[in-house]
Image 1 (cartoon, rainbow, N blue to C red):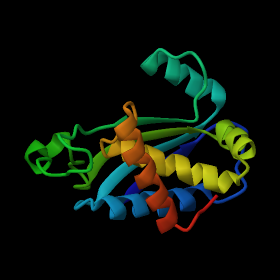
Image 2 (cartoon, one colour; image 1 turned 180 degrees about the vertical axis):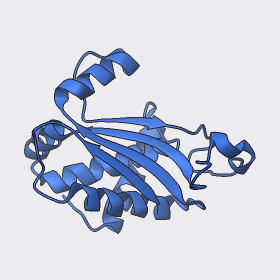
Image 3 (cartoon, rainbow, N blue to C red; image 1 turned 120 degrees about the vertical axis):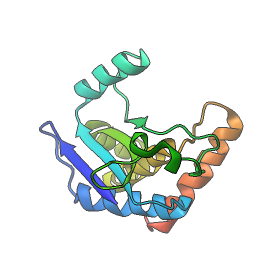
Length: 165
């Protein structure tokens, strides 16, 4: 797995964000049973930057905690069949890795939400990575049944990495 990480802004988190992101993304890939080596891009940014992205891509003019930009379209969430036929559209021609997509996280929101929910910034960050990985696998939470499925999967990934509330 390749995780390409970029960080901007003055806010810093008090733990190894890259190591945590690797642990959670690998756990999510293992949990979902991804049969390929995968590539993920992660941007850690500011409330101002994520607000602009949220406005541009979702027409919501406020900062959010995480944005997910899947590169793949799934017939069934978490089902990886059919991607080999897509070739260069699904796989990086240089590395051969499945290009899952991009994750953008506001470091300020990590700190705000950790305090609001009464857990550590590490737990909040790991949760946002797990949540976003499920979006990159084609899961969503717009409908109640989708939300329940996604919440259960998030909980199981968090248990797998042993990061609890």
